[in-house]
Image (cartoon, rainbow, N blue to C red; front, side, top):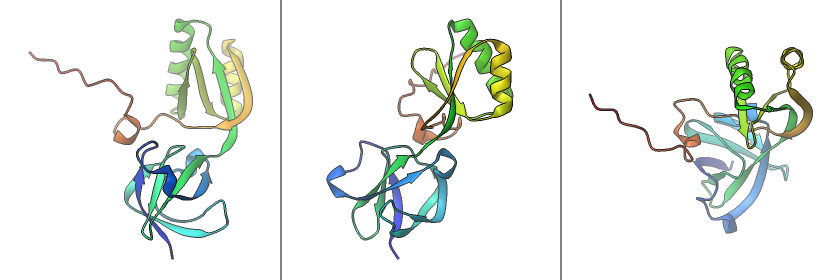
Length: 159
């Protein structure tokens, strides 16, 4: 049985060594150990030392050599376009208050998983929201270093 034993962030693994792809929804991309099936139909065991969040373009290193590229599957989402920073802050607060995973897109736009109750809330708030099918990559948890490669350096405050 082929095993995927390490996760390498997008851009850090040799794409010339790509041996296949696996397409997964956002909810299926946070795993440690599970049987998966590549897009070519070949099964493999994801066998990581700890649960990790896989992102689109990441590489799963195979124990037999080569890598499987992770592909974010299109899924039902809501894209929310905010007209002002104040509207963005207000809607972000409402989404955070519901503990809903969110992806932050350019131009004051947020993406969340499809949720009929949330769609009703957004309609009631008067924001522009569209249902669509698109890859969904929610923000990582506050303690997940894999998603923080674009984050600014921490601010150290001295007394």
